[in-house]
Image 1 (cartoon, helix red, strand yellow):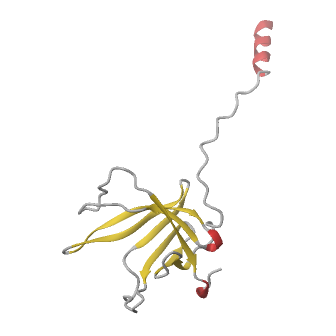
Image 2 (image 1 turned 60 degrees about the vertical axis):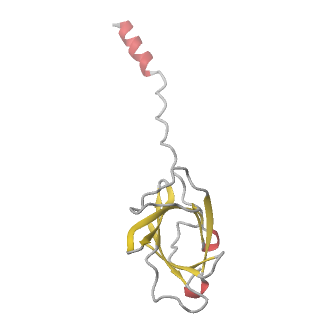
Image 3 (image 1 turned 90 degrees about the vertical axis):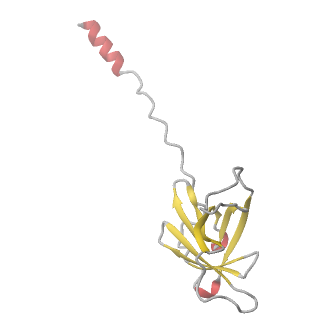
Length: 161
């Protein structure tokens, strides 16, 4: 009996096993990107491209519009849009645009997009430089394409901060 008690006391005095390792850390949302990003934006490299963003706190949707110098801007926005989601895998999403064939739109092409930052209330987007797709909008190129960075600057005239 004495030996059993000593064994039990010895086991109780052993150090507890270490806690399990924490799960891999989630990719953080870049600084400033957690705030409300709704409002108007303009592409810094080509101001003829403008974007109207809505933000529900989890998803940001950017409606794309192009303003032509000759005043030929069509009414409303195009059917292209950028959809970005704040997730545990980062602030990521895609650009969606209809692919038009000889007989009109045939499918919706999708390009991956990642938010690399939100400098001065803008959006720094990283995406593939180009992506070839077939008639069903499936990617044709097997090799990853080069990445390109685009800065969308917030327009101050419509409540931007």
